[in-house]
Length: 200
Image 1 (tube, rainbow, N blue to C red):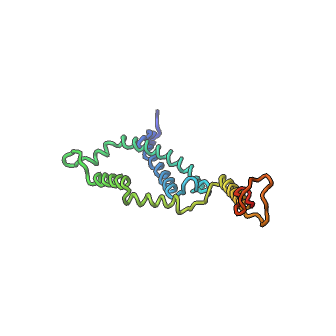
Image 2 (tube, rainbow, N blue to C red):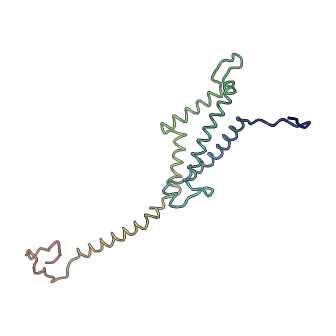
C-alpha cells in the first residue's frame, strides 16, 4: 500500500498503554468512592436520611468501588506481567546483576508489613483510621431513629401500649366507698379486697 510522502505508518495497538490508562482511571474512581464510603454513615442511617455523595447513594458507591476494584486488580496484574523485566531490573544490583532487595523495595516491604501487623493487632496508625471510620459511620451523622417504615409502626405500638397501660391502671383504681361485691361473688372477709374486681 502506497503512503503519501511524509506520512507515518498506522500506530499499532498498545496493550501496555491500555493497561496503564485503565489502572489510572480505576484508581481515580476507587479513590473517590473509597473516600466517600470512609465518611459515609452505616447502611440503615444512610437509607433513612437519604444520604448521597455526588448524587450517588451508599449502595451505588459500594457497587462502583467493587467493580473498579476488580478492574484495577485485573489490569494491574496485566501491567505487572507486561513490565516484569523493568521490575526485575529495579531489583537487580547494577554491578553484580544479581537480584537483591534494594532500599526502595525494602522500604515498601516494611510499610506493607507495618500496616498488616497494626491492622491485626489494632495498633496505630491502622487503629486510628479504623476509629475515625467508625466515628463517621455512627457518631458524626447521628442516629435518626428507626427507619421510616418502622417508625409509624413503633409509634402505633407505643400508643397501643400507653392505652393498655391506662386501661390497666383504670381497672386497678380503687372503687368508690360503699361499693359491694356482685351477688354471685364468693364470700371474702370484711377487711379484704378482691384482686379481680377490687370490691369489698
